[in-house]
Length: 238
Image 1 (cartoon, rainbow, N blue to C red):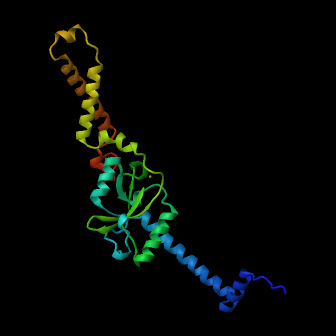
Image 2 (cartoon, helix red, strand yellow):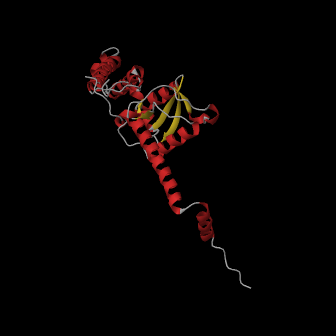
Image 3 (cartoon, helix red, strand yellow):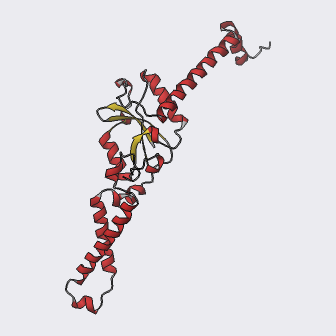
């Protein structure tokens, strides 16, 4: 005795016909897609326009602890790696669809509408005003921010070392002193240096003054500033 094998797809189609007509199902699916498009377009608009900075009403029990950060922690990272923490509306690169999906999912989960989006990224990723790889946050209040999404390539760990000399005025001065010491040590001894007391100290002071003046002139004339000063500024030359 042969038993016909069951075709699950045909069985599902048969059940579906008893449940609702094909036209009704298509209308419901179309409505879902339309709602999804409307929600996503609204989120994209909020990301690209200046929005409210009021704290977002998130449900405490649904928060992920490892995504909550205080402003001081954000400030430290920005200063160490010479990054900026600015509003999403001046972010000039494209925000990925995955980030929009996460925002929509978060809004659905917490039954709220999110606002006040901020992004951590290098200066070149923003449309900075003339004074003459990103992390997307929303404010929670009390200087706490909730991380929604990270995209792009990972930050090069050498970046922290490369921007260390311009982290602040103290680091800038120490770097100049170290370079001046190297220059003083590289200057060969001659009869004059042997006959003049503290000749190496004089060479060091001359080198320090010259290097500090040249570096400072170039740094500030190029419209640059120290990491500690720019991490929340919207201006590229201040």
